Amino acid sequence: MSSENLPQSPERRESPEQQRRKPRVAVVFGGRSSEHGISVVTAGAVMKAIDRTKYDVLPIGITADGRWALTADEPERMAITDRKVPDVDLLTESAEGSVVLSVDPGSREVVYTEPGAVPKALGEVDVVFPVLHGPYGEDGTLQGLLELSGVPYVGAGVLASAVGQDKEYMKRVFISYGLPVGPYEVVRPREWDNDPAAARKRIVDFAGEHGWPLFIKPARGGSSMGITKVDGLEGLDEAIEEARRHDPKFLVESLLRGREIECGVLEFEDGPRASVPAEIPPVTAHDFYDFEAKYIDSATGLVPAPLTEEQTAEVQRLAVAAFDAVSCEGLVRADFFLTDDGTFVINEINTLPGFTPISMYPRMWQESGVSYPELVDRLIQAALTRSTGLR
Image (cartoon, rainbow, N blue to C red; front, side):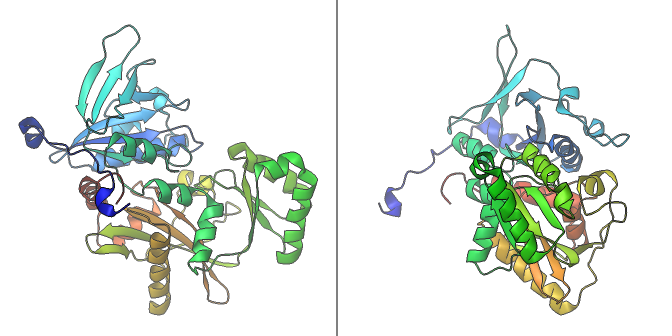
Protein backbone atom coordinates (compact mmCIF):
# COMPACT_ATOMS: atom_id res chain seq x y z
CA MET A 1 0.00 0.00 0.00
CA SER A 2 1.43 3.39 -0.93
CA SER A 3 1.77 6.15 1.63
CA GLU A 4 -0.99 8.07 -0.17
CA ASN A 5 -3.44 5.28 0.67
CA LEU A 6 -2.59 5.03 4.36
CA PRO A 7 -5.51 5.98 6.65
CA GLN A 8 -5.19 9.48 8.02
CA SER A 9 -6.35 10.83 11.37
CA PRO A 10 -9.74 12.60 11.16
CA GLU A 11 -9.37 16.33 10.62
CA ARG A 12 -10.50 18.33 13.62
CA ARG A 13 -11.87 21.77 12.93
CA GLU A 14 -11.75 24.07 15.93
CA SER A 15 -14.75 26.19 16.81
CA PRO A 16 -14.32 29.93 17.42
CA GLU A 17 -14.55 29.23 21.16
CA GLN A 18 -11.74 26.67 20.92
CA GLN A 19 -9.61 29.12 18.99
CA ARG A 20 -10.09 31.79 21.67
CA ARG A 21 -9.47 29.71 24.78
CA LYS A 22 -6.11 28.73 26.18
CA PRO A 23 -4.87 25.21 25.44
CA ARG A 24 -5.98 22.80 28.15
CA VAL A 25 -3.24 20.57 29.57
CA ALA A 26 -4.30 17.41 31.40
CA VAL A 27 -1.59 16.42 33.87
CA VAL A 28 -2.05 12.68 34.46
CA PHE A 29 -0.28 11.16 37.45
CA GLY A 30 -0.30 8.47 40.12
CA GLY A 31 -1.01 5.12 38.54
CA ARG A 32 -0.90 1.44 39.37
CA SER A 33 2.86 0.95 39.59
CA SER A 34 5.02 0.90 42.70
CA GLU A 35 6.18 4.40 41.70
CA HIS A 36 2.73 5.88 42.35
CA GLY A 37 3.87 8.27 45.06
CA ILE A 38 6.83 9.80 43.27
CA SER A 39 4.59 10.32 40.24
CA VAL A 40 2.33 12.49 42.42
CA VAL A 41 5.36 14.49 43.58
CA THR A 42 6.45 15.00 39.98
CA ALA A 43 2.97 16.12 38.96
CA GLY A 44 2.91 18.74 41.70
CA ALA A 45 6.18 20.20 40.45
CA VAL A 46 4.98 20.25 36.83
CA MET A 47 1.68 21.88 37.77
CA LYS A 48 3.50 24.61 39.69
CA ALA A 49 5.71 25.30 36.69
CA ILE A 50 3.02 25.48 34.00
CA ASP A 51 2.41 29.05 32.91
CA ARG A 52 -1.26 29.64 33.81
CA THR A 53 -1.39 32.72 31.57
CA LYS A 54 -0.80 30.41 28.59
CA TYR A 55 -2.53 27.17 29.59
CA ASP A 56 -5.47 25.81 31.53
CA VAL A 57 -4.62 22.81 33.71
CA LEU A 58 -6.77 19.77 34.42
CA PRO A 59 -5.23 17.48 37.08
CA ILE A 60 -6.22 13.82 36.68
CA GLY A 61 -4.96 11.35 39.26
CA ILE A 62 -5.00 7.59 38.71
CA THR A 63 -5.47 5.69 41.95
CA ALA A 64 -3.44 2.63 42.85
CA ASP A 65 -6.36 0.44 41.78
CA GLY A 66 -6.63 2.17 38.39
CA ARG A 67 -9.53 4.61 38.82
CA TRP A 68 -9.12 7.90 36.94
CA ALA A 69 -10.10 10.57 39.44
CA LEU A 70 -10.61 14.32 39.36
CA THR A 71 -8.23 15.95 41.82
CA ALA A 72 -7.88 19.43 43.22
CA ASP A 73 -5.44 21.79 41.52
CA GLU A 74 -3.36 22.10 44.69
CA PRO A 75 0.25 21.21 43.90
CA GLU A 76 1.42 22.23 47.37
CA ARG A 77 -0.32 19.09 48.73
CA MET A 78 1.67 16.85 46.37
CA ALA A 79 5.08 16.97 48.05
CA ILE A 80 7.06 14.49 50.15
CA THR A 81 6.25 15.11 53.81
CA ASP A 82 8.04 13.45 56.73
CA ARG A 83 9.77 11.08 54.29
CA LYS A 84 6.39 9.89 53.00
CA VAL A 85 5.28 10.23 49.40
CA PRO A 86 1.73 11.46 48.68
CA ASP A 87 -1.13 9.35 47.34
CA VAL A 88 -3.84 10.14 44.78
CA ASP A 89 -6.57 8.82 47.10
CA LEU A 90 -5.84 11.71 49.47
CA LEU A 91 -6.25 14.28 46.68
CA THR A 92 -9.42 13.14 44.94
CA GLU A 93 -12.58 15.23 45.06
CA SER A 94 -14.73 12.09 45.35
CA ALA A 95 -14.13 8.54 46.53
CA GLU A 96 -16.26 7.14 43.71
CA GLY A 97 -16.24 9.69 40.87
CA SER A 98 -14.24 8.86 37.78
CA VAL A 99 -12.87 10.67 34.75
CA VAL A 100 -13.38 9.22 31.28
CA LEU A 101 -11.49 10.24 28.16
CA SER A 102 -13.30 9.64 24.88
CA VAL A 103 -11.68 7.11 22.54
CA ASP A 104 -13.34 8.83 19.58
CA PRO A 105 -10.46 10.53 17.74
CA GLY A 106 -12.89 13.21 16.55
CA SER A 107 -13.47 14.34 20.14
CA ARG A 108 -11.15 15.10 23.02
CA GLU A 109 -13.96 15.52 25.52
CA VAL A 110 -13.33 14.60 29.14
CA VAL A 111 -16.37 13.49 31.14
CA TYR A 112 -16.72 13.19 34.91
CA THR A 113 -19.16 10.65 36.31
CA GLU A 114 -20.40 9.74 39.77
CA PRO A 115 -22.80 6.92 40.68
CA GLY A 116 -26.40 8.08 40.39
CA ALA A 117 -25.48 11.47 38.93
CA VAL A 118 -25.70 12.92 35.45
CA PRO A 119 -22.26 12.83 33.74
CA LYS A 120 -20.59 16.22 33.66
CA ALA A 121 -18.57 17.39 30.65
CA LEU A 122 -15.25 18.96 31.66
CA GLY A 123 -14.43 20.25 28.19
CA GLU A 124 -11.86 19.14 25.68
CA VAL A 125 -8.22 18.37 26.40
CA ASP A 126 -5.63 19.68 23.94
CA VAL A 127 -2.60 17.83 25.25
CA VAL A 128 -1.77 15.33 27.99
CA PHE A 129 1.33 15.70 30.14
CA PRO A 130 1.80 12.20 31.57
CA VAL A 131 4.01 11.99 34.63
CA LEU A 132 3.42 8.32 35.34
CA HIS A 133 6.50 6.24 36.10
CA GLY A 134 6.75 2.50 35.54
CA PRO A 135 4.14 0.05 34.24
CA TYR A 136 0.67 1.25 33.16
CA GLY A 137 1.95 4.69 32.26
CA GLU A 138 5.54 4.85 31.07
CA ASP A 139 5.41 1.55 29.18
CA GLY A 140 3.25 2.46 26.17
CA THR A 141 -0.11 1.50 27.67
CA LEU A 142 -1.24 5.07 28.36
CA GLN A 143 0.33 6.23 25.10
CA GLY A 144 -1.75 3.66 23.20
CA LEU A 145 -4.94 4.96 24.81
CA LEU A 146 -4.04 8.53 23.88
CA GLU A 147 -3.30 7.46 20.30
CA LEU A 148 -6.76 5.87 20.11
CA SER A 149 -8.27 9.05 21.51
CA GLY A 150 -6.36 11.29 19.12
CA VAL A 151 -4.98 13.39 21.98
CA PRO A 152 -1.38 14.66 21.64
CA TYR A 153 0.88 13.95 24.59
CA VAL A 154 4.29 14.77 25.98
CA GLY A 155 7.04 12.22 25.49
CA ALA A 156 7.76 9.02 23.63
CA GLY A 157 5.24 7.09 21.56
CA VAL A 158 3.91 3.58 22.07
CA LEU A 159 6.88 1.58 20.77
CA ALA A 160 9.60 3.77 22.27
CA SER A 161 7.82 3.81 25.63
CA ALA A 162 7.44 0.01 25.65
CA VAL A 163 11.06 -0.60 24.64
CA GLY A 164 12.29 2.02 27.08
CA GLN A 165 10.43 0.32 29.92
CA ASP A 166 11.54 -3.26 29.20
CA LYS A 167 15.23 -3.44 30.02
CA GLU A 168 15.70 -6.69 28.09
CA TYR A 169 14.48 -5.31 24.78
CA MET A 170 16.06 -1.93 25.44
CA LYS A 171 19.44 -3.65 25.67
CA ARG A 172 18.73 -5.74 22.56
CA VAL A 173 17.97 -2.58 20.59
CA PHE A 174 21.10 -0.86 21.90
CA ILE A 175 23.24 -3.84 20.92
CA SER A 176 21.73 -3.90 17.43
CA TYR A 177 22.76 -0.25 17.03
CA GLY A 178 26.28 -0.90 18.23
CA LEU A 179 25.90 0.87 21.58
CA PRO A 180 28.05 -0.47 24.46
CA VAL A 181 26.05 -2.59 26.94
CA GLY A 182 27.29 -4.46 30.03
CA PRO A 183 26.89 -8.22 30.64
CA TYR A 184 23.39 -9.34 31.64
CA GLU A 185 21.03 -12.31 31.80
CA VAL A 186 17.24 -12.39 31.57
CA VAL A 187 15.03 -14.82 33.49
CA ARG A 188 11.51 -15.01 32.08
CA PRO A 189 8.43 -15.95 34.15
CA ARG A 190 8.00 -19.39 32.53
CA GLU A 191 11.65 -20.28 33.14
CA TRP A 192 11.43 -19.50 36.85
CA ASP A 193 7.98 -21.06 37.31
CA ASN A 194 8.83 -24.30 35.47
CA ASP A 195 12.40 -24.92 36.63
CA PRO A 196 13.73 -22.47 39.22
CA ALA A 197 16.75 -24.69 39.90
CA ALA A 198 17.90 -24.41 36.28
CA ALA A 199 17.32 -20.66 36.26
CA ARG A 200 19.24 -20.28 39.52
CA LYS A 201 22.13 -22.33 38.10
CA ARG A 202 22.27 -20.03 35.07
CA ILE A 203 22.56 -17.05 37.43
CA VAL A 204 25.31 -18.74 39.45
CA ASP A 205 27.17 -19.59 36.24
CA PHE A 206 26.85 -15.94 35.19
CA ALA A 207 28.38 -14.91 38.53
CA GLY A 208 31.15 -17.44 37.97
CA GLU A 209 31.97 -15.79 34.66
CA HIS A 210 31.60 -12.14 35.65
CA GLY A 211 32.04 -12.23 39.42
CA TRP A 212 30.02 -11.10 42.42
CA PRO A 213 28.29 -8.87 43.33
CA LEU A 214 25.30 -9.04 41.01
CA PHE A 215 22.32 -6.76 40.67
CA ILE A 216 18.91 -8.43 40.51
CA LYS A 217 16.26 -6.10 39.11
CA PRO A 218 12.75 -6.13 37.67
CA ALA A 219 12.88 -6.11 33.87
CA ARG A 220 10.11 -3.54 33.58
CA GLY A 221 10.58 -1.40 36.67
CA GLY A 222 12.24 1.93 37.19
CA SER A 223 13.62 4.39 39.74
CA SER A 224 15.60 1.60 41.42
CA MET A 225 12.45 -0.04 42.76
CA GLY A 226 12.86 -3.74 43.53
CA ILE A 227 16.61 -3.77 42.82
CA THR A 228 18.95 -5.66 45.12
CA LYS A 229 22.73 -5.84 45.17
CA VAL A 230 23.73 -9.46 45.94
CA ASP A 231 27.21 -10.27 47.22
CA GLY A 232 26.85 -14.07 47.15
CA LEU A 233 24.58 -17.08 47.13
CA GLU A 234 23.15 -16.36 50.56
CA GLY A 235 21.04 -13.40 49.47
CA LEU A 236 20.18 -14.56 45.95
CA ASP A 237 16.73 -16.08 46.52
CA GLU A 238 15.57 -13.14 48.60
CA ALA A 239 16.72 -10.73 45.88
CA ILE A 240 14.89 -12.71 43.20
CA GLU A 241 11.73 -12.71 45.29
CA GLU A 242 11.98 -8.92 45.71
CA ALA A 243 12.46 -8.35 41.98
CA ARG A 244 9.56 -10.67 41.10
CA ARG A 245 7.35 -8.80 43.56
CA HIS A 246 7.53 -5.95 41.03
CA ASP A 247 7.78 -7.95 37.80
CA PRO A 248 7.73 -11.71 37.08
CA LYS A 249 10.53 -11.17 34.52
CA PHE A 250 13.83 -10.06 36.01
CA LEU A 251 17.36 -9.18 34.94
CA VAL A 252 20.71 -10.17 36.35
CA GLU A 253 23.54 -7.68 35.77
CA SER A 254 27.20 -7.72 36.72
CA LEU A 255 28.79 -4.90 38.67
CA LEU A 256 30.45 -2.36 36.40
CA ARG A 257 33.19 -0.61 38.34
CA GLY A 258 33.39 3.06 37.57
CA ARG A 259 31.51 6.33 37.77
CA GLU A 260 27.76 6.81 37.25
CA ILE A 261 27.12 9.44 34.58
CA GLU A 262 23.74 10.73 33.35
CA CYS A 263 22.84 12.84 30.34
CA GLY A 264 19.54 14.43 29.33
CA VAL A 265 18.21 14.52 25.79
CA LEU A 266 15.57 17.04 24.71
CA GLU A 267 13.93 17.32 21.31
CA PHE A 268 14.32 20.75 19.69
CA GLU A 269 12.95 21.98 16.38
CA ASP A 270 16.12 20.81 14.61
CA GLY A 271 16.28 17.46 16.38
CA PRO A 272 17.41 15.99 19.72
CA ARG A 273 20.19 17.68 21.70
CA ALA A 274 22.08 16.51 24.76
CA SER A 275 22.44 18.44 27.99
CA VAL A 276 25.59 18.81 30.00
CA PRO A 277 26.11 15.46 31.78
CA ALA A 278 25.88 14.88 35.51
CA GLU A 279 27.63 12.49 37.86
CA ILE A 280 26.03 10.54 40.68
CA PRO A 281 28.72 10.33 43.37
CA PRO A 282 28.97 7.28 45.64
CA VAL A 283 26.10 7.28 48.15
CA THR A 284 27.64 6.39 51.48
CA ALA A 285 24.36 5.71 53.29
CA HIS A 286 23.17 3.27 50.61
CA ASP A 287 24.63 0.27 48.80
CA PHE A 288 23.82 1.95 45.47
CA TYR A 289 21.68 4.76 44.02
CA ASP A 290 18.35 3.22 45.07
CA PHE A 291 14.89 4.74 45.49
CA GLU A 292 15.56 6.04 49.01
CA ALA A 293 18.79 7.70 47.92
CA LYS A 294 17.23 9.19 44.81
CA TYR A 295 13.97 10.57 46.16
CA ILE A 296 13.87 10.50 49.96
CA ASP A 297 17.43 11.39 50.92
CA SER A 298 17.91 13.71 47.90
CA ALA A 299 21.36 12.43 46.95
CA THR A 300 23.30 15.28 45.40
CA GLY A 301 24.54 14.85 41.85
CA LEU A 302 27.39 16.85 40.37
CA VAL A 303 26.16 19.09 37.55
CA PRO A 304 28.04 19.37 35.30
CA ALA A 305 30.00 16.16 35.72
CA PRO A 306 33.76 16.63 36.10
CA LEU A 307 34.66 15.13 32.71
CA THR A 308 37.13 16.06 30.00
CA GLU A 309 35.81 17.78 26.87
CA GLU A 310 36.32 14.55 24.96
CA GLN A 311 34.42 12.50 27.55
CA THR A 312 31.56 15.04 27.63
CA ALA A 313 31.26 14.98 23.85
CA GLU A 314 31.28 11.16 23.81
CA VAL A 315 28.57 10.70 26.43
CA GLN A 316 26.42 13.33 24.70
CA ARG A 317 26.87 11.51 21.40
CA LEU A 318 25.89 8.18 22.96
CA ALA A 319 22.85 9.72 24.70
CA VAL A 320 21.48 11.10 21.42
CA ALA A 321 22.28 7.80 19.69
CA ALA A 322 20.27 5.93 22.34
CA PHE A 323 17.39 8.40 21.90
CA ASP A 324 17.39 7.75 18.16
CA ALA A 325 17.88 3.98 18.46
CA VAL A 326 14.63 3.60 20.41
CA SER A 327 12.80 6.20 18.22
CA CYS A 328 12.13 8.42 21.23
CA GLU A 329 10.31 11.75 21.18
CA GLY A 330 10.32 14.66 23.59
CA LEU A 331 12.75 13.71 26.32
CA VAL A 332 15.00 10.98 27.66
CA ARG A 333 17.46 10.60 30.49
CA ALA A 334 20.28 8.25 29.55
CA ASP A 335 22.28 6.57 32.34
CA PHE A 336 25.85 5.39 31.83
CA PHE A 337 28.83 3.93 33.61
CA LEU A 338 32.24 5.39 32.88
CA THR A 339 34.27 2.29 33.59
CA ASP A 340 37.74 2.24 35.09
CA ASP A 341 39.27 1.66 31.65
CA GLY A 342 37.70 4.90 30.36
CA THR A 343 34.85 3.32 28.36
CA PHE A 344 31.25 4.50 28.54
CA VAL A 345 28.66 1.72 28.92
CA ILE A 346 24.96 2.56 28.68
CA ASN A 347 22.90 1.18 31.54
CA GLU A 348 19.39 2.30 30.57
CA ILE A 349 17.22 5.16 29.40
CA ASN A 350 14.13 6.65 31.04
CA THR A 351 11.50 8.02 28.67
CA LEU A 352 9.67 9.74 31.57
CA PRO A 353 12.50 10.44 34.02
CA GLY A 354 12.22 11.93 37.47
CA PHE A 355 11.02 15.46 36.86
CA THR A 356 10.94 17.39 40.11
CA PRO A 357 13.10 20.55 40.14
CA ILE A 358 15.76 18.68 42.14
CA SER A 359 15.71 15.66 39.80
CA MET A 360 18.76 15.15 37.66
CA TYR A 361 17.07 15.64 34.29
CA PRO A 362 15.79 19.19 35.00
CA ARG A 363 19.02 20.07 36.80
CA MET A 364 21.10 19.06 33.78
CA TRP A 365 18.97 21.24 31.52
CA GLN A 366 19.05 24.12 34.01
CA GLU A 367 22.84 24.00 33.77
CA SER A 368 22.49 23.83 29.97
CA GLY A 369 20.47 27.08 29.89
CA VAL A 370 16.89 25.75 29.96
CA SER A 371 15.05 26.61 33.19
CA TYR A 372 12.46 24.28 34.73
CA PRO A 373 9.44 26.36 33.56
CA GLU A 374 11.01 26.68 30.10
CA LEU A 375 11.55 22.93 30.00
CA VAL A 376 7.91 22.23 30.86
CA ASP A 377 6.72 24.78 28.30
CA ARG A 378 8.96 23.39 25.55
CA LEU A 379 7.65 19.87 26.11
CA ILE A 380 4.03 21.04 26.00
CA GLN A 381 4.59 23.10 22.86
CA ALA A 382 6.35 20.21 21.12
CA ALA A 383 3.45 17.88 21.98
CA LEU A 384 0.88 20.38 20.71
CA THR A 385 2.57 20.50 17.31
CA ARG A 386 2.96 16.69 17.04
CA SER A 387 0.14 14.64 15.52
CA THR A 388 -1.01 11.28 16.83
CA GLY A 389 -0.99 8.19 14.62
CA LEU A 390 1.76 7.22 12.18
CA ARG A 391 4.46 9.89 12.10
